[in-house]
Length: 131
Image: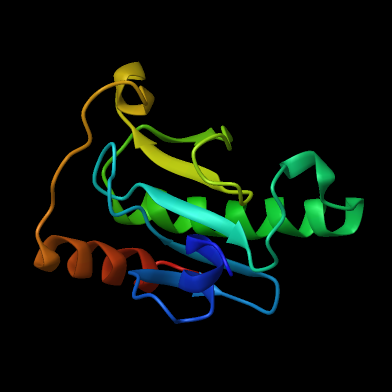
């Protein structure tokens, strides 16, 4: 059975989609550290980022960079933090987190709760800033 991220990428599970192409999918984290926290995944279920072949790895980082630039334009922040942890879900994923202070990317602190409206507005803002 497909994992949660593969099911999100296929449309089987709902998400706040930011962008996708034939290989990758970006969507808002539903348990975010801050507003605008976005996950970027390859559509194929691969557990470990360094198991991606070189071509896919390079394309993945380029796709994530495009998403990070849109987040930076949409969400007031100093920069976009990047984290690849990969222990909680066995599917490669990059966290893109708007940062104003170091604690904004502290995964041991409580996640914030957002309304459906805030998620939708945030996704729309990011999508409108994609180039």
